[in-house]
Length: 381
Length: 92
Picture (spheres, each protein chain N blue to C red):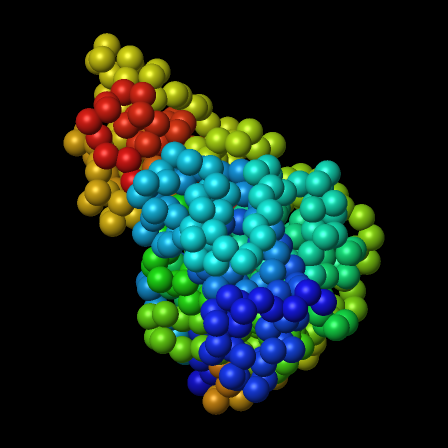
């Protein structure tokens, strides 16, 4: 193992005087490697702490660019980085934090074609992703390669954390054999997330990663930790191997497995439910409205979203989950134009309405598409 | 009565309640009572065939009911059923 330099000994003093880490543990960290998939809410604190702690080699996979809406929680990035690739923004911050760490960048989507090649070269893989296909891919790649997978996931005010595939312990598929179909579980882009929440879960992931690298303590392997920020409570659940789970011996098409359309790299793309209703682009809606078309306009977003920005010609706000129970409030003698933020929730609502016999049109791309293509004065959230 | 803990992701179907008291001596009875009181929740918990969905786990206290007796898992009045759905984060 490569020993610590005098500069490093000065830097890691508080670890070195900690008997459980010491010179031996710190040297082990210097000679170890971690792959972090994603540099978002979870990856931000995780990467900062792993670099600060002196993990010698850190790989980062992300193909996204920094967006202004990321900065509420993705603390590795800054205002000056908006528009830059996330891996470059993260690399610069980590280089400033700890120049002794070697940072390796993979500015590409993590896919079935590259996952095994990329992950093979690291001791531990950390799941900082934001979608089901990549979570199953990270899991399966770790199982095939025999790497521990440090898991964290968040929604609104709640988080989950665990350590998968470590020392014969259970993995993500033992917890959830299959993903939900698209649309049935809301995303943070729709449901929102408290900015500090990924800070807590990502920091738990960093702690577990360091424990694995140092071989100390009791990890979350075999346990699922739930965190509720509103109640400020932690709950621990037992996680077991599922004897009925199929063997994982090769990577599959995870988009197909999760029922989502092929990604083109655009974040605005939303897997809307297919259904027996009509669809219109925002341009078509604008043109038809200009020529006098006046459908009943139903906004199916949440009240908090409508408070940010709404159409003054929308007639009714019903959150999409409540549409099925409030059909009596809708007219049967008019066309209904339904919209949300991006078009996904409104597609679900349109499906419900079409099934109940309403004459319904979904506005594709939602109010965000309208703000981008029709009315540049509207805010985008 | 047993209590069912509702996760954030499903609270919009329970009128924003995080804990719901239900009648029932088994996990299946308690969940059925919950879905009866909040009908729009049903399709998020059960398939059309009446199977608990594979991306929704239910724990009796800290044990997964898949490894106890599934729907037949007995419940006492002091027990908590915790519903833990699969969550992915940002893009889902």
